[in-house]
Amino acid sequence: MTSDMTVRLLRLLSLLQTRREWSGADMADRLGVTVRTVRRDIDRLRELGYPVESARGHAGGYRMGSGTDLPPLLLDDDEAVAVTVALRTAAGSITGLEETALRALAKLEQVLPRRLRGQVTALQASLAGITWENRGPRADPALLATLAIACRDHEIVTFDYTTRHGTPTPRRAEPCHVVASSNLWYLLAHDTGKDDWRLFRLDRITDPALTGRRVPARPVPGGDPAAFVAARLAAAPPATAPSPPSTRPPTTCAPAPAASAPASSPSTRRPAASTPPTTSSPGSPGP
Image 1: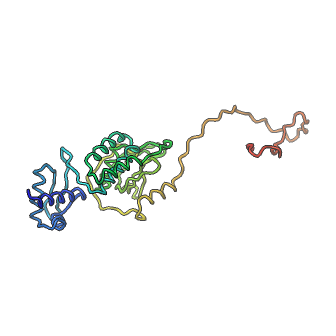
Image 2: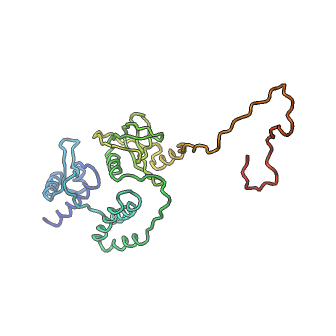
Image 3: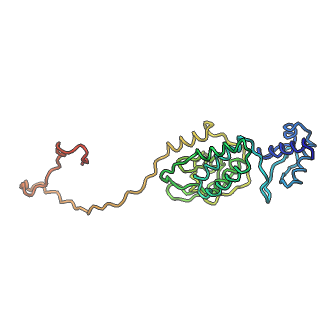
């Protein structure tokens, strides 16, 4: 295998990993070769163990499929640093991924080029997190992965959702974005049953399932998913907890005096409500 062919195969592999599907013409244009050369290079990648899938016809193309083994990934310098920061964040914010993220971070640092290893080491030494009070449940990594795939592929997903009142309901939605806010994760999706945009808390989602039906990408109102989610959260009614039962003993009201009854003496007359004395301290509670 010549050096030019090796470089071309690496570029081809990088293209397959950056987009879900490529047409042969697009890949040939990117690589500066013919479509026939692309087909031959695809066959070489398959011989090396990469699960490249193809579809025939005008709408067909090539895409990286799922195999039994994870193929090597090609990262440029910026992507390697970004993955490092993402792994460091995942180690402290996603339940179930803390140790796994740290192991992956150690492997990544071990194989990084020397020009990037110093940046990664500096990031690990300088980044620190502050753990505030727990504001709510965190997301399940498997659920995050399923919804992320559905958002990427614009694939309709079904799931059971428990409302804020505790009522479970089946939902069918077109997922758009997964957004994190205040230690909670939300799915921004277009509910096909409600025919409207909805926010779903991930800790209330169960039994998610990909339907295999893909739809065109639906633009988010305003064009900014994070701003849309923030506006919806700000307008949502606050969650209220039920009031605790009163510990005061029950009282009985005395019957009202008859109209013909004479005025009661001072010793039996009920005291009238009076205003608090003006000498009370400024911090004393009101009536």
